[in-house]
Image (cartoon, rainbow, N blue to C red; front, side, top):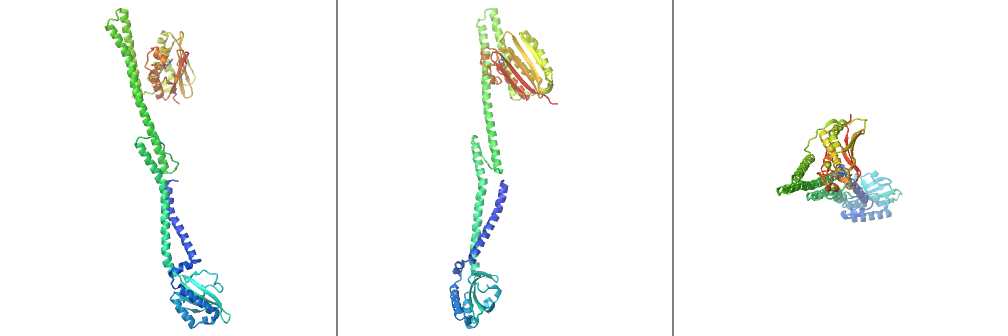
Length: 477
Ligand SMILES: Nc1ncnc2c1ncn2[C@@H]1O[C@H](COP(=O)(O)OP(=O)(O)O)[C@@H](O)[C@H]1O
Ligand SMILES: [Mg+2]
């Protein structure tokens, strides 16, 4: 239930519950007083009760012994006078007719009084003439056999006013306070508990602790807030972790770059020193030294190129120029360009194209060319067989163009395969053979293909050969 609904319900309950409880309490009290607790209520405040009781006993005696005295006359007048002090009226009824009535009860008629024969079965306090009356009655027979009843009507009004009002007020107050405390407790539990939890959580976050979970099963607004809060905590944690990862990567990058630049420079320095010290004393030696220096410088140039390209890609500083490219003719042009060099270095090149379907993709052809060149350069570098072949296969499915570049070179050990697309990764054998390279070629390729929304992956058998695949989504028409 939402907190809004809960608040509304609680406010309604705040009115309804006290009203119901109060009505129940009042009914209970009234039924208690009017149902038999008269003595209890009566004793305290009608000091004349004993006198009335005495008078009643007297009257009963007279009624049994000499009922004619109740027909009227001095006895009744005296008795009535006596009772007046205790706010009590005296009524005598004979055969259904009131034959005597003390002055203070002249509003009461015969109809208000219980019928003959009921003196044992009535509630002592009754509403008569709009007032609570403590009724005593005694049935007897007159000398002539007529049914007679003597009634004493003691006013119970005063004790109700003075006794009941403060009690009812007290009960109402208690009920109100009780309901209020209960509802406030229930409401504060539903609101304060989650708020406290959130406060606690914010404190922990501000202290830099993100390794906890804010759990909630609540479906209300605060439950939602807790969920969002936890989501925020998770996002924050992720982004901090990412930041740390970046920082780590950056340090690694700097270390790798310094190492990779240091190596060629050290050897260049060595060869230059050799020349200076006259170690290259023959023209052939001098030639070899200079050639090596040149190769190392070219390597470094290449490495710096790749580094700058990679860092530009990494920082998203290199804008892409995406265009509708027919990938089939793009690849055919590219192959034509490299074919001569490949054949020169004794590599057999085979091309296989799936003729069906279109090859239109959205691509930056300059950058995809870089991808293909990086893959082809690797193939060339690691071709170690007599019969060197590179096979290029073009294929298209309903939604994508897939390129496979296969070579029958050294292959990649299974343990190295998952890492070849990581930057600066070079498998151990290739480090040793001194084939040269930055370990950035495939990382650059992966970055470019992924920026095209495509995928790149490799299959390889150590010693047999390698296939690098990449996929680019076709333009859907
Ligand atoms: N065609 C291939 N044959 C064998 N090994 C390969 C091939 N392509 C890539 N590799 C392995 O993957 C590693 C990473 O390739 P790359 O990122 O291009 O770096 P680099 O070529 O500068 O070493 C290479 O060092 C090599 O071990
Ligand atoms: Mg390479």
